[in-house]
Length: 370
Ligand SMILES: *[C@@H]1O[C@H](CO)[C@@H](O)[C@H](O)[C@H]1NC(C)=O
Ligand SMILES: *[C@@H]1O[C@H](CO)[C@@H](O)[C@H](O)[C@H]1NC(C)=O
Ligand SMILES: *[C@@H]1O[C@H](CO)[C@@H](O)[C@H](O)[C@H]1NC(C)=O
Image 1 (cartoon, rainbow, N blue to C red):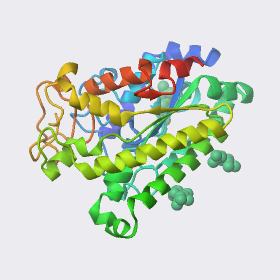
Image 2: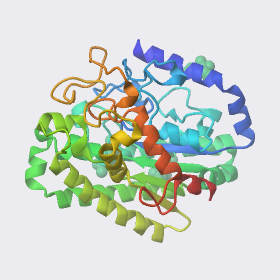
Image 3: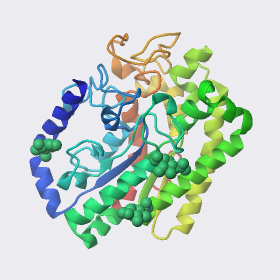
Image 4: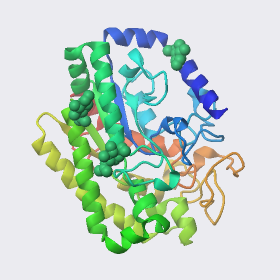
């Protein structure tokens, strides 16, 4: 049933913008190719047999394009990838790669490959049974790459990818939450592997995948670092820290990974001719919102809007039987793991038009205009 609803949603979304699709065939506009996890999944997991699903209410309750019906997005409204697309003038959201209608001219908005539970390495998210890791997401892009040659012709397809397309990669949280830090699955990994070796492997795997995208003509990249995982309602609930505290180990791991990510992107900027890799400093950005939440109009930066359990409603995931807050725009966190649309709006503003503290060496609007 939920699957049927989401297919109908895609159809109605497409019907809303027939003019757009036709005009793109003549003159491709800005497009985004979105790789990552549940922070940016726009519905790929609807098509998987998986325990990581968001095609159930009240997810999507504030998503206007679906009239509040769930789409598979793991938040109440738009994801950061949706809002970035809007802000950069993309006429329609990038459709999930696995949706049957993501073919033909529809792929000229870009395509979304992100998958809830997915990580940089294949083993991440095994607890969910199915999810699409980064390597397979890039394999899927290789399929889209061939379709673009068919839709635009080889020469135009190359130019479309190199000049008009932004490749965003929002991944890494699950490699910690649902791999390294997940005791049932990774006890042996943790015993045998220091975080140094684990993180080195994440970075080298990420390098391989970004280089594969480059070899397929991607040039404008933005890569998000890992947010303060120790501050999400799930971690705060299971560890029972005070309202103004975060759990240290997850945050330390994120900081360590983020330092190496910064070096990786500097290295790729130097060594891949014509490519621009932007670092989205999600860690400091989310910290800024959590620390100064009142000045952004939020009432809480610790309690999930939709969820149950513990002091921060952070143990049982969001679903039809969860309790839900009254004012969804007053919560930084929608559920135990994911920011609300209101928080995504604040974060996106910094990424699109902000300064180098949060997006560097240039911001997303400048990247688009290169
Ligand atoms: C979407 O796909 C279905 C079959 O997969 C097809 O019947 C339908 O015409 C498509 N709709 C659009 C708007 O392309
Ligand atoms: C990751 O999984 C894919 C799909 O199953 C497989 O083709 C690939 O070889 C795997 N990569 C590694 C490093 O194990
Ligand atoms: C893309 O697919 C083709 C086969 O169709 C393969 O030869 C090529 O190596 C693939 N490229 C990447 C980067 O995976």
